[in-house]
Image 1: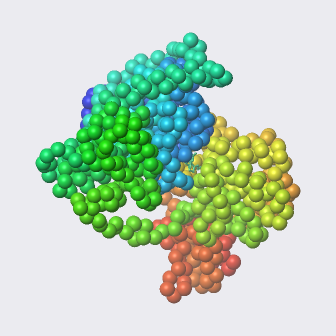
Image 2 (image 1 turned 120 degrees about the horizontal axis):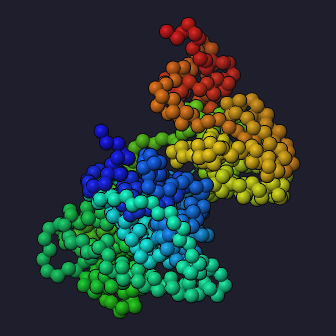
Image 3 (image 1 turned 60 degrees about the vertical axis):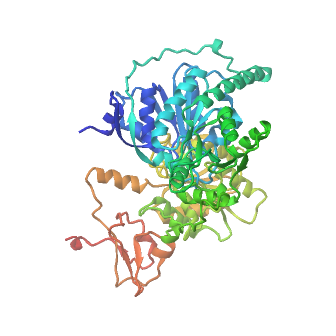
Length: 629
Ligand SMILES: Cc1ncc(C[n+]2csc(CCOP(=O)(O)OP(=O)(O)O)c2C)c(N)n1
């Protein structure tokens, strides 16, 4: 039976059902990518998962999890100016981290080519915002391709690689959550592996590679010229095309048209297939630089044009400006409502946009109720999670008026009831800087910040160094679980899977943290004591609260055929119904019944026992040996 990796490496043309993220890996292989880098973040982590299914000795390119997105982008850049076709992928907000380097890339000759895959997240399914990275293409003069389907993602990666090699410049491939995760039958091309060529090709003659002082202007001039050429490519691109109406046959000349890009094109097609009217769609999936000729022609040949784009009003402004410049009489419509600037534009919401503009053709309809309303659920930490144990203990040690600063990771869930911990959030690694600011001149309220171990290496260290050198007055709790849990257990510098682990304790001591304690989070008593002591310290103090991620641990055990055979139970004789297990510890395994009794859900309990210490009357127990029948 062929494995997934065999499929990816199949030398012949073949056709198969594949997720968008996975199809990108086949495209990388076919394009001859030599270097791929990433830092994990939804919706892109499955790209790395697919790469890792290929055994090292069969994978023809170098791959690494870099410490953050900026470093990942820089490694890909270095490889590209040395002659390698490189690619880097990360989530939407990852580009903010990488931006300081990314905005220079267009100025420089990337002789090997470079494709930057962005996982944008309309709907903020797994992000702290739904930023529209199409702005970055404009900001940095980097061409952008926006596939609408997994099949397009595959084909457009190859096109992005071709363009970036031809013009020796970076190209953005912007995917959104649906495109990353949808599955589609894709016709793949041949894969003919080339012998790896690692000849170093860096040469200053290909430069200059120093965008400083007045050298910036010739570099910018060259970039603007490249963008003119790219505009011609966009005008000729098959990804920018008029989709003929699929609904009933049209009579007469086209009157109405729609300009749209990426996934909303599919929503529109679905709606138009059901409408009586034949409306042309100009699909702009090679969306920057704008294919001016094609758009002008479309505006010239239609009396009314509606622009449909997901998130911000970018195409709208540019197309309206184009129409003004060309003195075109076409009436241009766009979304009107602020609500329409948010979340994904699926078929229902797209119908609403159509109905607002052309109500006689698209009768207004009620939206279905959101799914969340049908089954409300609270975000939960997993049974056995060390973060829960830590939050429970820390909550008992904190003064009521303490200020707690969260960071990004599974421990962000501490914000929810019953812990209420981590009262603000900006982005990965912000916690130390924000806590330092909150502590300034603050003599009344203690400040406590949290950070995960992957985040500490990613963007936390500068804030920690800042706290040390300025002796800021707050306590940092490092929530160390040995993995990048929230995004799917990727390795990091402190996990020991990439290399010998960088021990956080040693690192912080070397940096000069004067007050530092380390404790297993299951030892709630000790953790409480440490937190109390730490809060009494004048200046910067650190508690490392460690426990392995139990989801990862249990999964690994199960793969070895080991299932937790030990579960806790509640002794109904001892239970006095204090409900601390439910209301303060909050493990989802505890269930309260109508008669007030509490039991343990045996399917959820992993038998970790971190809950035992939370019961004041020791009613939570492991079965005695003789009960083990
Ligand atoms: C700039 C940026 N990159 C990536 C992510 C995706 N992401 C969310 S949480 C997280 C790290 C979680 O790992 P860790 O800090 O160890 O906390 P844990 O989830 O293990 O508790 C990542 C990479 C993000 N939100 N922002």
